Image 1 (cartoon, rainbow, N blue to C red):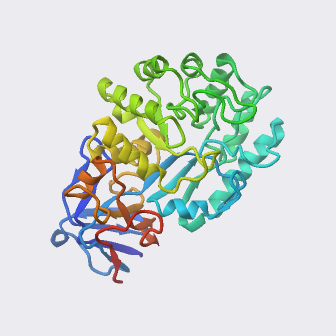
Image 2 (spheres, helix red, strand yellow):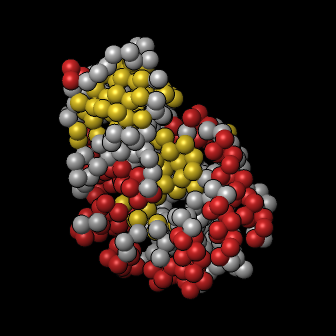
Image 3 (cartoon, helix red, strand yellow):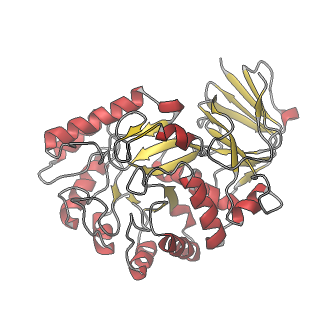
Length: 387
């Protein structure tokens, strides 16, 4: 039995918008799963195999990037960059979700080839976790000529995602809706490209097609890169029950419009975050933290709620076993504190002013995966592994 005890926690963020801050100063996990939290004096902390002294910093569920484009291992040919996943871990992210492996050189677009690549992608990130990171990959881009059996074949082989609808040859809502329906029938989640074209072969996906297709996630509702007109973004927020995915590599003004509209409609629980990297904008190791700070500062959202966009909301929308402080959920955490000399009286107040916090440690499945971040500003206080 592996038992993790994190003591002297200053603040516990739950990932739950309805109750974003939990009372307690201690967290216990056994064999990689959360078992208890609260006051240390009330918990069974004996026989721990790993003890972390948080030294008063904040503990939150590990952040989740809902929109990435991986290829293989910890390498991206899009930017000729090694170790981008490890660098993202240093931004407090513990889970990545593919929106399609579209940057694979020579990516097959025939049906046999795209199915084979989707299955292979799912397998190699299941078998190899760079720096311990959880990468949900194998997200095929749908192409003309696919039939229901193709989706069953992929689902039977373990594929659980569709890449961005609209990046392939399927450009009309009717055909896309049918294929998304087949994917949903076999337990596969779907995302649609939203806005102007991003890579050769993609095209404009407007609000009408998004609504007709009916995917589970409205991918980069703030554009990737070019956003839809304001009235179309507002229309999507008003009429859709899908997740509103706001990404770092999109239009910042459209991101703020989306968050303001969602807040006014009482739909903040549908907001999730991604980076949409690696892409032409590069790799953004701090992309999720940056979006949390920006949306809190410009969207009139308390920082503890904005953190939920980057973990708990995504967990619920994506049906994951991480991203929330709940008994039985994976012990995936980020420990962070106010950056040195940053304005604000507390870490949350500093983030609400638009400042990045400093990451001091990440934990995945109850195992310490990184310590002081090499990418965030230095934190005022750092957690310490003492056993």
